[in-house]
Amino acid sequence: MPKYYITTPIYYINDVPHIGHAYTTCAADVMARFKRMCGFDVFFLTGVDEHGQKAEKAATEQGIHPKELADNMVGKFTELWKLLNITNTDFIRTTDERHRKAVQYLFNKI
Image (cartoon, rainbow, N blue to C red; front, side, top):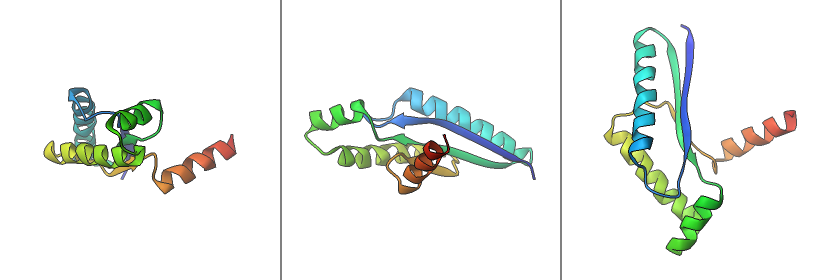
């Protein structure tokens, strides 16, 4: 079975998901479903970027720790994907240990 990999951008968590997030993820989901129908072994990744000034600023404005903001927003993204019946294989957070290890590995290879 041929493999097919598709991903969305990893979305910033400084605010709630909006129509652009939904549009992009639905478009990727359509392609993932189509490729599955064509017999491909599909890996469909989406996720969030929990680092950066935007996240820090949003957390500060809300009077909470950036990790708390990230946890709250991740729930909103995953709830939306469930509501839209998105068929992603995996959901990555840039604060995940597996993400950290992969980034370190790639930087060390460079």
